[in-house]
Image (cartoon, rainbow, N blue to C red; front, side):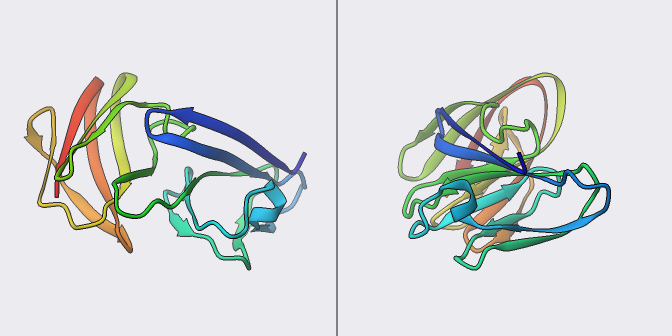
Length: 169
């Protein structure tokens, strides 16, 4: 198959793990469309690209990925956009882009979540927030973040086996 869709559910909600496979011996331009994966076309999805750490909001015309290597794969985490609450959109810590998150709590001004991975991890998580963060901590220490797109922020994380992240809005 050239396309694969797996539905995942965990503490951050339900999402689709999607892959576009280039089964050719040459590089290809590949087009993502929600219809190709049997996703509802009237819902806005955030699409997090695992390998390139890009975040997209899809439109009905689709998204073109240029230069997909021979026998290469695009891995996307597709989540319906939910307004008004923080939403995990992806990370580069685990291929599933969500199963590494072990807890998720929002109290209206503070988001707390846990991350677990074997060994040492160094990467980022991307969160859609309804307002800009004022402060972010990992295990009580301040961490850096950057605005990645619209209301999405990428938080740098470095930890051994597990951590707790707090984001104050």
